[in-house]
Length: 345
Image 1 (cartoon, rainbow, N blue to C red):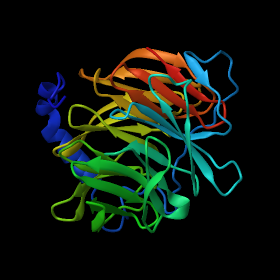
Image 2: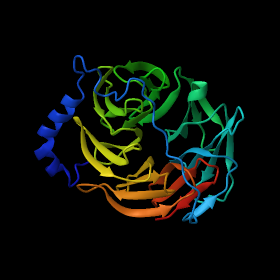
Image 3: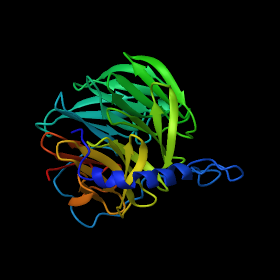
Image 4: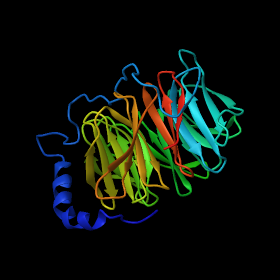
């Protein structure tokens, strides 16, 4: 899927001016403080609360006994994982379903605390458990295949080639693991490391406190250029064109950042509390949840700007979303305990 897409030619003509404006805006000015920090004591933005549903969710809904904190698909094993919240208890649960029969046998794994992010790893799923300072390696057949202790509330994780990149929120650092061994801890001007995204060539870390994205220079072991990402950025995902897509929940926007160099190239308004995001690499569709409307929206992002092509009613509080690239099925998780929703666009 690598390539520039139709927007590339237009972008080049405007990049020189755009880069100057953005880079200048992100420089600390003497006597004026940090341009990337809006207030002295910032707070991270979370999902907008959902209203009661006024229409039935589209697709099929699978009942679960608790709220869903995240969902992920592992294509190689043909499985879907859903992390359920502890719901007041000490332990939480991850359920793993076969994609070819979501009503079939379910593998259940008890985990030591609430999972913040689930992603597909090399041999199963990776799950961050910030409350326990752990990154878990979960088998598609169920069970914990490995544990990695990471101080400072590991919140986000991604694969980057043969490396595993973990964002440690409270340490405000990005850890690099190679062959299960930590080879670097990279810090810099970030205030909070909440999500990491890999385009294959570049790694970007999302800082929710500063509502900004930063380059992660793996060669120099340094945090590079940082750019404002709206007023309340929450989640990020790479697309098929070397960009990182970011949901700006506070300002209702879907942002696209090129990564060579890091520069904002698109901002598209998405009203209703945009929050969760997943990318369908087979169809170049970015799926985002809008929690204030109990909806999930699909945008074709291959053109000059995102084009809405799908919109579906969801379960209440749709904080998480993933997509199965082979057939394009979209899976939404309800943080309000109203199930796992499967939509076939």
